[in-house]
Amino acid sequence: MTPLLRARRQTYTPLLSPFNDGRIDLSEFEAAIDRQIIAGVDGIVVCDVIGEGPVLGSDEYQSLLKTAVSHGRPHLSVIAATGTNCTAKTVERCRRAEELGADALLVTVPYYSKPTLKGVINHFREITAAVGIPVIVDDDPGRTAKDYGPALVDALAEIDPVVGICHGAGRLEHFAALPASLGDRFMHLSRDDRRLMEFLDLGGHGALSALANIVPSPVQTMVAMAERSSGCDSLLQAMSVSSAAVGGDDVAALKEAQFFLHQSPAEVRLPLVDAEPETILRVRHAFAPFARCEPSTREAA
Image (cartoon, rainbow, N blue to C red):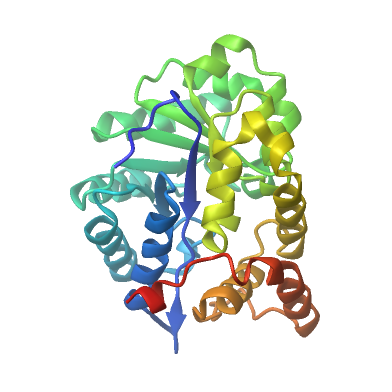
């Protein structure tokens, strides 16, 4: 298990949730965890938006989290995505995730209801008072429909159990404008695979990378070698093309890429729908350079 520290750059993967004929496929989920362990990533995130968390039933959520803890430990930190736009429900989910063995929690800023900044801060005070494990705040205005700017990060700095901020796509300029004191106060992670190297160059501490579901080894290498990125230009180019092919975080496209490289089922749940044929062709073309690079956990078994 990797501690949530800023001593070195770290990679966390928000795992896709594999479905087979409408049901969670735990054997495929374990294979996905094995790929992360082999690649040497620092941790995994279970049941966030990339893992289609909003469409998972309570039993499915708990089954995936239990499997992540039992199969991923001690090699990986296990972070449970527990956020909703209801404080009481979020507190309940956070407590249950802690009971099931999560090392930390990824909690989104409340979405759609657009509370005031004071309401958001009280939301996180209630959460952190209810649990004894670290909290990472998922600040992605593209999904929450509300941008609180640097005032949110400044106010969160007063809540000690909040140890990290996960920045959504298109937030590079926001991160760059934060004062140094706030840069040092938190572990800052980026969801934006397409601009990850810029984020790291600006002092970011790591990635919460959807792309690492498909190519965990290259993502881990890229994060670890950020200070020497000039030596891996071809890898950076291939990663850029691959990220663009899946639209950054298009779950259906990500699952098609995972099927192409790892034969994991590409099934999604409504309201998501299967990738269009042109998307599948684009994905296979983009990920073809990695076809011989990613180790197969099936062959190892």
